[in-house]
Length: 441
Image 1 (cartoon, rainbow, N blue to C red):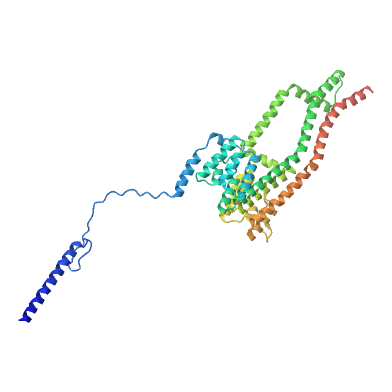
Image 2: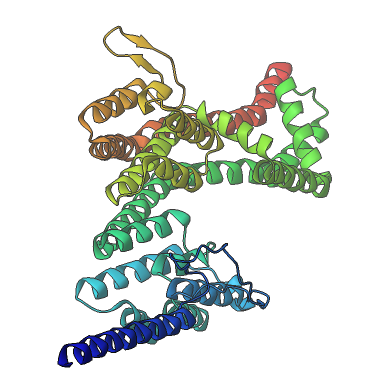
């Protein structure tokens, strides 16, 4: 009996266990998501599509550089008229770079350096310039970018050097190099002016002497000879005719002189053809043509060396140097070199050095063979900037020597020309006396 009761109890317990398991599975079915299939029951896959709203426009997060770029654009648009017409002399520009180099080298911050310069200057326009530059730097612009806003004040080459100095962390070194370069340039201009002073004074004195004799001396001598009714020599008659024309038609003569100067100046200064012709004529003038050619090469070498030493790419260095040279022939030559570099050619090859070992050279009127050879050595050794410095030093010495001796070379020529002019007038005045004496005898 007890065994029967045990069997019935075990069967009931198994039944309730199975019933609980079934109930538990049915609950799991209700919880299972729609995209999960029951392995026990084969079902077809169903896709539940929920109603979707139109996608909202995705806006990228505004990063700090974009904010700074917007600030730069807004600041660059605001430029007062007084700053557009502002110009700095070379002396003021040199003072600016010299003071900035001193302040930054002493450890002063860039903004503080500008504030000190602003407090030192007395010119109102320059004060406004420094205030505007401080505002732009505070707005996120760099020193070089601020200089680029004023291209009429700060040359593009100096802006490029400042940019390279900021990127490389050598701003104070670049500023010192700019100051040294500007001082050398001003010293060079002073030497040219000093060398040209004496010849110009001689020319002005000669013209004044000849004009004075034609206006005041020759008319009185002509009246004296007119009273004598003697036949005048050809030279004397020509001089008297010129004197009469100058005294009677001086208004027309002055108009023709000033009009011709104005036309020639306009043609040379404002037309490309005129400037090319003027440069061509200037290059064939003895002594001065050679000095002008060497001066252009010296400036190109100096600018390229500074840019390359500051870390500017060589193609960019040629592009910047091209803007700093006034001579159109050398501008075109630098543009050709830059395009050749982009195409993979070497600088010395473009300058005319085809093969140094085979002695194959192509004549170049702008760049001598010596320059091409030194550039070639710099290309082989990877020190083009050092070779450019040597080229600059060599031509600087050559020009300095010529400027020191130019007065010695020109003085005899000018004295000879003055002697011919004055001697011809005196001979024209004295010749009739010999004719009169011969007639009387």
